[in-house]
Length: 442
Image 1 (spheres, rainbow, N blue to C red):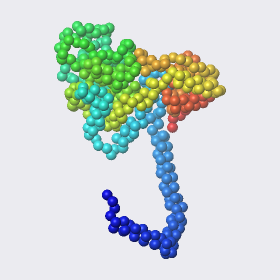
Image 2 (image 1 turned 90 degrees about the vertical axis):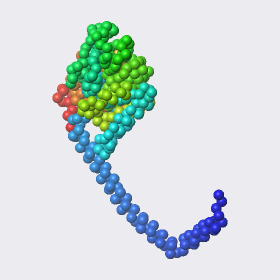
Image 3 (image 1 turned 60 degrees about the vertical axis):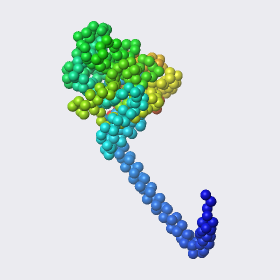
């Protein structure tokens, strides 16, 4: 629409008036005085702003120093160069930064504490698994807690586990002991060599638990039983959410597609999330489990659930830190190992140093193996055991393997950003006695 002529005339008059006022000496003098005052005030304003920034920086520095002095005894950073992902001391692999930020937001205190986190979890689950399967998710503090919740929630049925499935968990307990820790009602059936249909002849309606013992060539699948009223639970201590290119690596997705009613998995390790126990399966069964009286005492905190929401969101894109390590190529590891060996050879404390090519593992006895490279390093005066113990007490704590003469540094589960720190820790130990080389943790 065209601008009316009277509007154009008003605008023209206004502009003419502004131009006339700008040419007047009084207006020019006033502008000059205001500009002078602003310029004179600039150094003071800048100084005040700089002082504020410096005070904030100093406060932040003091907070970091205070944290490092007080909390390092609790949260000791770790570099896992042992070649085995799942060690008694941890994996050494962080969760994604976004997951840490999500946990921080929950720990800050000013957040809602209701079922919203669980609703977010369910939505993320449906995004990455079959939404038509009517699945639900529940998260407990750890794997043993989710096993306890399962037993209590399914206590109205006979709960069976075949003796061939009584695996040993990462905690050292057998699966049966963990299931019976609170309410000893889980029954063992069959022999420990193989499963036969006759092992379940005495039961018509029951809950059957099968587990991945890590040594079989393939992940476990639900059994084909000619009994319609059977709830089948698959326990996967090592698994991802979705099936990856690695067919030996179990997944929640594959177990559900194979017919599992419930899947129990650890949240850490190759799953990529925080340490927790996760239950995924048919909605009506999961709902019955989390409605038990003890669930509130077993449920994961809102911070852990928030971290898991973030993990599920990134699991499909391969952006998790564990994904990057799993996908690290052999040539990449070879080049890094050669650079590290060259650096260590220059140290006076190193007697010998060589690059080797052994497979890395996820667990000590598991079927999962990945091509890797190691640096085998021998000290001039320390035994391999003494040296490994010293490195474990360093900051960060460096976990390595050892043989009779040397320590073995495997780079498969090590971020490239930590290679330099490994070189400092190993190449910097010049002393001949453990008492002289052990670093004190502040």
